[in-house]
Image 1: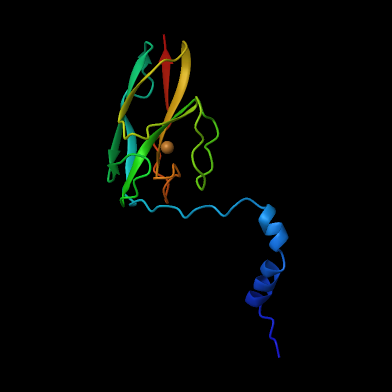
Image 2: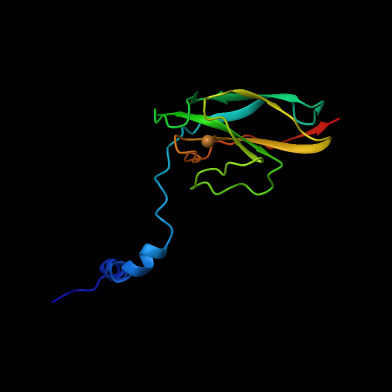
Length: 148
Ligand SMILES: [Cu+2]
């Protein structure tokens, strides 16, 4: 006799929904582990700094190494700079690639940023070979700079 345990019930439910599953988003790829002590931060500018544009932004990383996108070596990643981003992108998906979410997939550790005058926020997020934040995410504090 077939025993329906809670687990097999779920399995039957899953097997019974192949059409729905095909329409759903593909399963998120597995997350890449980061050491608990990993830390990404701004070497410059300082939080609260007043700067002129273009401004050089220098990225610091501790407890992990920088590697270009596509490289799957353990405990490495590449920098992403979030500019004036209020809501963090999802941790389980590739970081968007647009004017507000800049990728440094060649392994760069600094950039020259041209920004209009006014206040801007900057935040760093490390991404793995597939541009997905690590588990746990390695993110800097969000800093605010004023461009003259
Ligand atoms: Cu990336």
